[in-house]
Image (cartoon, rainbow, N blue to C red; front, top):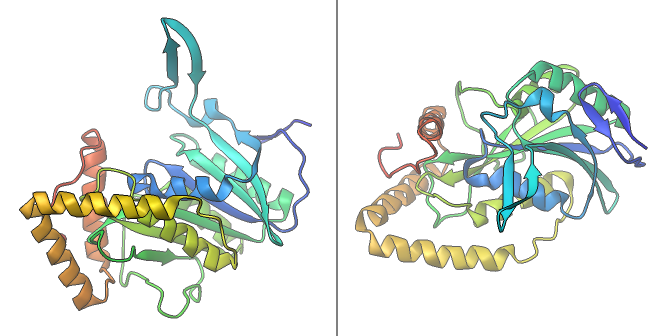
Length: 292
């Protein structure tokens, strides 16, 4: 069974009951690859049932296909993609849209997602990702919450106060348009230490667990806990060997204790702008410095 609708194609028929639609893309709002890694773990026991039209959404000079050569022979060519994965856990059905953030035709993309929502009678939309923040790796990973509804945050949850104006992501555009149609929405954004230059395993775990609490599900974490412990040891050793980084981490810990780890919109905006500059400069990891 293969059916093309709008900008997406369904390759396999599935029977889903009011699934939750979850979305995460690489690139923007995916600091350290945490958001897409979390989405990948959530989707790992599922089945890819469809994909979006890559030719319509990507500039291949920006996101170039990758070519694998083995002993001089071209063995594989892989294009950037956006896949649709279906998964059921306990009594909850999930649809996960993930891949590379599209460069082109966002409104047409969102319209196709809306068609997907109507086709499968989606019950809610959940966006996940990660942003750089003034947070140390030595403390629990903060998760910021966003939504089109005002009463989405549970007691004790983190919400950035005040106006936060930043360049939008494709997942944000999707949340906006679906929310305008009355679909319940939620966004969960793990804050990643801005001095990290590798995927932050602790944040992946925290983000998956936060989505699980929201949906009343428990996703298997496989060996992530052991990997997070090993990474923590490596980061602590790095700080021991570099006094300037150690001093900066201590400052972040002090700020977190004073402010109960809730950053202002200005602080978050500062870190996102720094992240955007680093991406434009070729992905150079941010250095320690002022965060407020």
